Length: 179
Length: 332
Image (tube, rainbow over all chains, first blue to last red; front, side, top):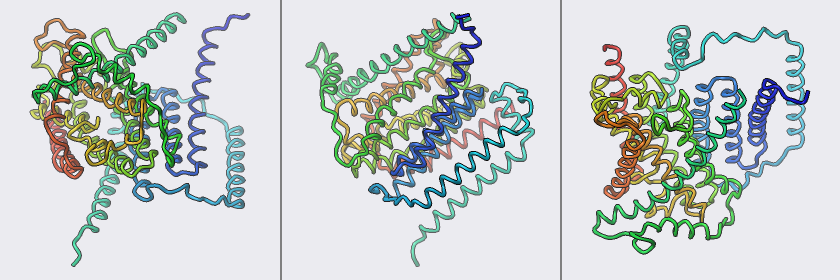
């Protein structure tokens, strides 16, 4: 049989898309880890976040994917960049001397961790894939957040409020005129 | 069915080509309007030489920009410097894909359209900032710092207004939001007093934030010719500079379209007659006209004035609007 059934084609396309997004995530992470200019590291991070958003979209969670882009790329990366530019606007190629010993140790540790994870994944007895109980729409999410996870939601809100007030206190204390 | 799938792909590609053309056309002719409109205000003629009434001026500008050499000055981060203009344009055009132009037109409807527009727009800030930083120029760096301060400050009231609107419409689907406003101008969200008496104010906040988001005067602190030369775009030549400008005008078009969709009833006629694409375009270009009008009426503010306006006026007003809307939605 030379004809490819539609299911096969769809599966191949899905695998290709998954590989593309996963590759983007890993590539961005590698750039973030090894780039010599800090700004490029942040760009790598942004790329990695985009790949992750793509993976969320691939897994039928468009809301999560869009929030990932809005918050992580649009806010967190931008704020990191802002902090970088205020701290050292034009650092000339931060001369990170590659410490051989440290690098080797880091690589070894990361490799061991990866091997351990792969072994764990291979051995684990997986639960049957979870059945999606609802469409994952915004309405479902909102209902879940305010009913079932209401307490956690309120706690996180309180935490964020505290963080805002804390930031205000820290920023204002520097403004007081000197006695 | 494989054929449906194929047809959908072809349709999307055709729409994409059309939308890129639409974006380029708008960038070209809004730049002409940008020169003609102040000329009318100031009793001048504006460009007249190229073509009848200067109508071929954008073509001449385009050819001039394309003919210029692309310079990369020493000390710049070459890779980021070249990526930045592209990364500024692409998200803007992606936003256009999501806009419902009329009942039957629109490249792609997704149920989270409104959210998607703002998440794509968020990439814009990062890209402009990268352009400013990669230029390795003090003016550009200042502009890059400003673009962040400005966009963080204005995204908050903008998103607060939109959250309040979504509480009323119960959906992020742009097409659905327009469909709810059928019938006549008294049904438009801008006059939906049943939801919140502050709705016209919400539209005003939206419009101001849209100007700031698109870096338009009086909030064009990023470009600020008189103090920063051309800000983040100082070091760009030829089409690199051109792409930033295309992005700016496309952002104006996207902002005006979203304004028309959210508050002014999209493709619906003010009197409930003959809905269609033409009404959408009329509203879109009236808003674009207003954007340029504001530019040539108000002088540029200072960065402090801009941040004060956002944090001390717009955010409290937007919060008040949010609370009023929440209370009304709960009570009614």
